[in-house]
Length: 615
Ligand SMILES: Cc1cc2nc3c(=O)[nH]c(=O)nc-3n(C[C@H](O)[C@H](O)[C@H](O)COP(=O)(O)OP(=O)(O)OC[C@H]3O[C@@H](n4cnc5c(N)ncnc54)[C@H](O)[C@@H]3O)c2cc1C
Image (cartoon, rainbow, N blue to C red; front, side):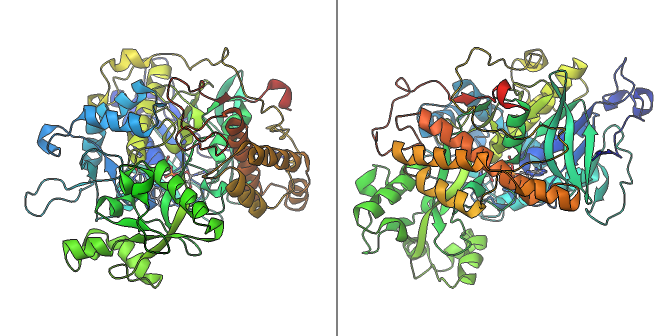
C-alpha cells in the first residue's frame, strides 16, 4: 500500500511572502514546518507558540480537539506567582522543595527548578490568551487551593474544579484563531488552508501510527485520517500525546490514553526513561466507569475511612490524607490487605466533615463538577461516604528529554505527560503536570527554533525564557550511548515502519489490563513481575490479527495499533520495574518494602530498542 502524500505540506509560502515577523529566515524558502501530535495542554500551547513564532504548524489529534487528559483535570495548576500573589510564607523555593520531596528524591533538580521558576511567565501567557482563574470573594486575588504534599496553598483553579476544561477551551480558541480550518475527519471536506507561516492546520480524528525517519532524524509522521493512511513531512515533530492509563484495569484517564507517543518513539529508536514509575490516584470512585475525586477535596479536609468507619491514614503517615499520592494509594492497598478486604474491597472518602465544617452548600460551590458527577451516580456526598479505590492516573516515565524537550532522536521533541523530563521523579506532586505541559512545551518550541533557525528572535515569548536564554537552548539532542540499557530486547519484534504487512500480537487487551493491575499495579513483587514479563513476551510472540485487518481493509485499524502500543508500553514498564529491585516512590515492591533513599537509588532506568530487534 502506498501512503497518500500529505495534502497540507506548506512548501508554498516563501520567507518573503511570510514577512520578517513570521519566522521566515534568509536561506529558507519556506517557513519552519512543525507537526504537533496531541491536543492536550502541551500540544495546544506548543502549537500556538510555534505559530506565533512564524512556523507552519500542523496539529494532529486522534479525537476531537477537546479530547485529552487535560480536559479532565480538576484540582488545578500549581504555581507560585511572586510574593504579592502567594500564600503567606510561600515561595518558589518552597514549591521546588515540595516537588523534590514528593518525587522521593529522584527528580532532576535542574528540571524542577525550571518548572517552578518559569511557571510565572507561562501562567501569565495563559491569562493573556483569555484564561481567568477563580478569585477570592473577599480579596479579589486569585484563589489558591491546597493539595496533598504542598506545604502551602498554591493551586490556581478555574470554575472550582473545571480547570482542565477551561484551559483546554482557552487554548483551543487560541489555536482556532490561528487556524485556517479544522478537518472534521472521515467524510469531511479536504483541508482548506494551505498551512502558511504563522498558521495552524488542524486535523481531528487523525491518528499518528508511526514516526518516520531518514538519515537518523525524525522527519515526519505516518497517520490514519479520513479512512486512509498518510505521510506528512516536517522539520520537527513535537509529540504531546499524553499518558497510558489504558494499560490498567481501572484508570482516571480517558480512552485516548493508550501510550501511542511512547510506543512510536520507542519503535523509532528513542530512549525511554523511568517507565516503572506509574502514579495511582488514591481516590477514584469505586463504581463502573470510575470518576476521580480530586486531591483538592482532601485538601479541603475530607478524610479516608475503612468499612468500619475507622480513619486509617494517620496509622500510615504523619501527614495522613495529605501525604504524597503514592503514599496514600499504597496505604489504601496495604490497609485493604491487612484488614482482609483484599482486592474486592474499597475504602471511603468522607467529605461530610467538610460540609459540616464549612457550612451547607460548600461542596457544591467549591467542587461543582464533582458534585454534579457524584450526584449523577446516586451519591449525596454531603451526608454519605464515597466508596473509593486507587486508579492508574499518571505516567512519570516516558520519552527521555533534556530540559528543552529534545529527545535522543534529532528532529523529535516531546512535552507533557509523554515526556520524561525528570520533574516528577518517582512520584508526581499534585497539580504539577499541567504546569509541566506549559513550561516544557514552550521550551520545546524554543528549542525547535534554536535548532533550525539558530535564533529565537522571531519568538515573542522570550519573557518566559530561563536565564541562559536562547544561547542556552542551542544544544544538541541528548546522547545516551554510554548508558546501560535494561534487557528489553525481546520487546518488539514489531514490524518495520515501511512494511507492507502489519503483524500484531494476538491477545485480548482486557487480559493485558488485568495482568498489569495484578502484577504491576500499586503493589508489586518479583514473582508477579516475572509472571507479567513472561505473559507479555508470549503475547508479543503471537501474531496474526493485524495481518488479518490489513488483508481485509487494506490498512491497519486504529484500535489494533492502540492495542499494540499498550503491549509495548506495558513491556517497557515491566522491564524497568523488574530491573529496580527496591521500592522508590510510586514503584513499591512488597518483597523489598523499605523505601530507598535517593543515594541508594540506582541510575535512571533508561531503555532503547536494540538495533537487532528492529526489522
Ligand atoms: C481525571 C484527571 C484529573 C487530573 N487533574 C489534574 C490536575 O488537577 N492538575 C494537574 O496538573 N494534572 C491533572 N491531571 C493530569 C493532567 O491532566 C495530565 O497529565 C495532562 O493534562 C497531560 O497533558 P498532555 O498535553 O501531556 O496530554 P493530554 O492532555 O493527555 O493530551 C494528549 C493528546 O494526544 C492525543 N493523542 C494521543 N495519541 C495520539 C495519536 N496516536 N495520534 C494523534 N493524537 C494522539 C490525545 O487525543 C490528546 O488530545 C489529571 C488527569 C486526569 C486524568
